[in-house]
Image (cartoon, rainbow, N blue to C red; front, side, top):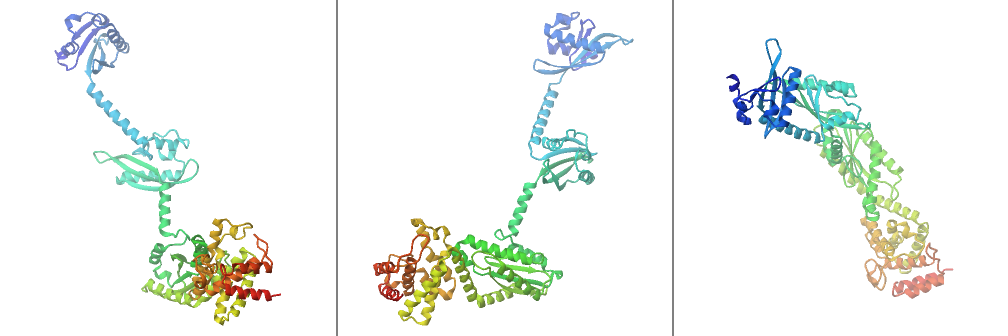
Length: 580
């Protein structure tokens, strides 16, 4: 009666495989009647293949004399058959019985769980971070592929059951990891760590480590889950962004934003008196106009190097904007500020910038009181700076022009002698035309500076031994405009600049750069045009031999009224003929 009420199919056989009993569940599920198979062997009652499987499993149970579990598939169901021996009071096996349990639902759930585990494992293995799991003794009980690879590359192949002390190369760091674990399990709170490590090639890397406590339903912590990732690249980007936010890219000095931050830091009693020096670079516009902004940038870099050298270890140098700089020097009085300014001027004079002598106008002030507004101090410095700039303006521009002239002479050894001859010829013509003394002074300046714009022309073109190409000639023609921009930077030389701009205009209007005609061309420009052409014709050049005086006079006569002012040409030729 008991066996009939068991909710699973049950069968009993003798030790010689003859069927003794099948309960009603067995009969119902497998469509077999006990009365049809009782006393029969498995081979007689069931298909041959099925009977052979039954016999094999039964024999295994009888040999072991213990329970034997068999899993199989019957039709669309997954079953487990528990086969066990039936023993008498003497513990002797008299038969064998089996209970068949349908485990389809359980197996499906297990398969689904395993599938989910595999998906989760695949995801965890796919993430670029190293993930690990530790028990309450900080022993590793699981990890993903990246974690495993990290240690495999370092020769560690056994990880499960080990602690950081067993597998990590640096014992001091490993002990710190274990200390972190204990702290997390005690506080039951996640924590973030950042530390420096060496990769398998010995390169320094920065890693971040997040550890989270694993807490059960009872609130007990049984371990930690951790994730490590290499953040070296991110840190480098962060550092670069920080650098870009604080440093002026061109000069490598602190920028305006850094100035604001540094003021907050230095507005403290221990840094006072606070020296403030402001500088404004001289000649940047001329260099930009003449040689382009790349050379202007180089001028600023060279000046920045001077300021950094002088202030190294004692002050902070900031690019305030454009060609302006500010220096903050903690614990600096007025005398020390003046000494710093003298050192800057000295280093400028020692500089080897190739086009002009480094020059900077400087002003200083000292912030004595914490309550004093830094910007009021800066205003005082600016007033001093621009007052100095105004006083020195003329000498500074004269110095820059002289530096540019020397640079031009270095480009072409004939330039100085050519200039002297042009000045000499121009003054002769000027006196002949009854110029006033002030006009002769202006004529002299134009004669001296008429080729100053060539400083911005490549030596490959200036010293080319053959005829210039059309493209090269167009570049050469720009020297008049370059010269104009250089000289025009000085407001008191505006007319000189205009004459330099137009000294290649022609009487017939076919000159450059403006195409002026006849008396539209300033008279000084007309004079320079003639005397400059004569000197070029009668002097050996890299690209041609000098003409004789007779040949040059012939050319002047030939071009009179077209290229040259006929009246000035006539007077100049008269002078030339009178020369021995």
